Length: 359
Ligand code: IPM
Ligand code: MN
Image (cartoon, rainbow, N blue to C red):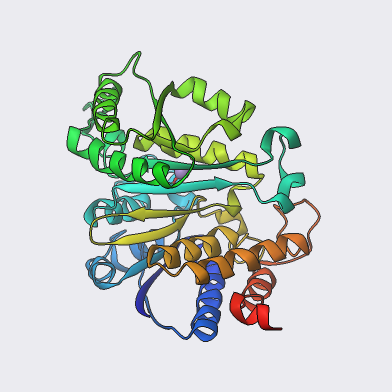
């Protein structure tokens, strides 16, 4: 298969972890006879310094034309510490999601048996965790009207949703649940928020078209507790943009490091693959960042194009790195391995499963 992949390293550790994903993609090309074309573009704080814009027009054009986008990370301390900045790196990522219509962010939280010791939670609680969060990505409080009063003493962010915005991500979540354990949990705050009540109404209506999937509803505060107490009760979690942002980072606690978790952001025309984690500016250039979230995001990219064997080959190589404890500092606490070394190890362990059988 031929694929044109846009590489957007972004800020902080983004380019370093993305470079490890490219090693893996090249190994996949070679092992499975594919031909991928890579095109690089800038976004975030780097793009602001070079062009004044967090999402330059050339980057957006290139992303629209690509078959898929691999995204590194975004954010910079310089802006985090300056609440008055009018142009912010995050606008690059939010702009991409909005402009490309990437309305569904799919965030799997799956426990690898080889990583159980890595979790700060008890083994019997986390063993077998296999849930996936469907986070609505282009609506809600992230994109509602923002305002600040002239004297700067009052500010607001509106959380607005339409039935259509809720419906399209809901259908994807139900379809996924149908193929999984057939349970969907809608997480909201319908006891307080009008927008959450629209979610409940819309999702309950859509649920009628998926009679084999059990629909459960849960308030976000309770869901946060349940996810820590009993994560294996969840199959598919469906939620809005803000709740999904928070709950997915919380989900990474189960696995033990936010550096391990990948995601896919899907629209009608485009798809982008991005780690859960941020730009971790303190680690930039130190060769200590965990490349696994980015590498597993490439596995999701391949899966998106139906390249399931290829995706599995990446996941198996990642698992091998866990078993051999070739991991970065954030995992298992005792590692001496750097970003580059882990990337080399994983890419060198990518094998064609059929050939493996013949050995
Ligand atoms: C994420 C990130 C982003 C978000 C930030 C960087 C804007 O936290 O992808 O979860 O809030 O969506
Ligand atoms: Mn987040």
